[in-house]
Image (cartoon, rainbow, N blue to C red; front, side):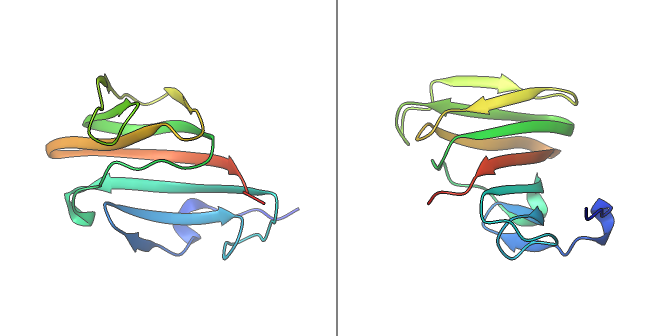
Length: 117
């Protein structure tokens, strides 16, 4: 078993977010079958573009004036959900989504998904 505190994980700046890889490829603990990590969305990382990927489970650890938008196409994010700590999101494979926030706001999450073979 390997254990680590979030503040001990390396921070990686990606477009629209800062991530910390706990489990998976290039992570604290290597895994070829799953990925687990933390992400922080705020003005510090700049705006995020809508994106899609493999099925994902998300746990919101903290949020202030932040939300997720999702929908069937990149330019048709028809649903907006305000986020709060303690929420769980299930993102189906291929669903377009983006995390956004008001000035001074942020969204903090834990993400989990299977490695795509």
